Length: 493
Image (tube, rainbow, N blue to C red; front, top):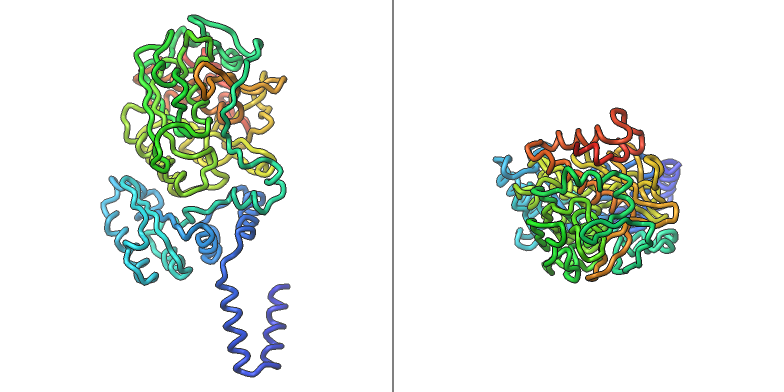
């Protein structure tokens, strides 16, 4: 239909316009074609792709669509290069400098400016860099290079735009992004007590974690947490990390987001650190799964939605630094995006290639993104995707949790009352609840630490196989819930 209209219009123009008018008309058409798409049009295409095809990837879109998103995202571009799709690691890429130089020369020639004016950063460990680009022709030329693995917008704010244009998104409170500083008085039915004076969350008992502590407490294993940081106002995740029955371990905190420190300014990371490794304390507060494990916490983002350039770079950096840390065995991240981000994918692959066991959240959504399946990077084969299920089930997701064929394990985190998992609050001496696939992921990372501590000579695959063998559906995975809930006592015996 569109072609018919176009040809009719062209026929009318040829028979009724002067040559001068025709030239002007052609010029106007070309200018309109060069105008960038609106953010609304870009988001509509992204949503359509996810709904109809199950996924969205920039590489499947036209040069004009890609450039439009770059234009709407502060002209910032993320480039991954290499001699093949798996050539992401500079240390294993002998021609990385030459390839990078060729790309920079092409951009300089096309944009008419030196690299000092467009090169934002070049990654130390990955074949990846960020630049600013003005012209669509530059994007076209880059995508034709054999050494290009991906060209993506580096700062396109999908969620911000969705909140502006999508009425469902506006009404769903999408801006909260997992943050909160609340505290709560824990219901007595949501925990049991243990020595010296700690509270065991009800969810731990459902997975036989307290019984598993007779065999393993996570001692000697280091977990890396990539999140929003850890509260400086929660001493049990600071100066009192060795408290009560927890001893001989360390907690380290790093900030790789916007150069403004390691302190949690959201509240989400503090809760993840708590469920994973809070001490078996004498303060009457919730204990973590691996209460004798070491913890390295990275503040890599402002909140759980990884859409800004600063957040995506922070997460990429955290993955590479944890990948390079030989003490780290497990990485947990309860953050993500609804579609793939090349530089984060590179970071995940980098850490995975160094033997890390990586757990990522399958997704937690309010109404406007509930059409999304398993989110990125939990959707990657290099990660273990975790989601939350209701108490007493292994195939009934929590009210806001995602499910799908890429899920690997589940964790019971929602009661019939609606209450979720007790954890330490952002503030000292106080507790709170936390739910979603986020807490399920952090808890499962803690379970992996118990298994690895019991078998310190094991490889990642051996630990993973033991977790699978101890879960509900082994050896046949469920189509939407993976291996299901892990019986942690069985996993450490």
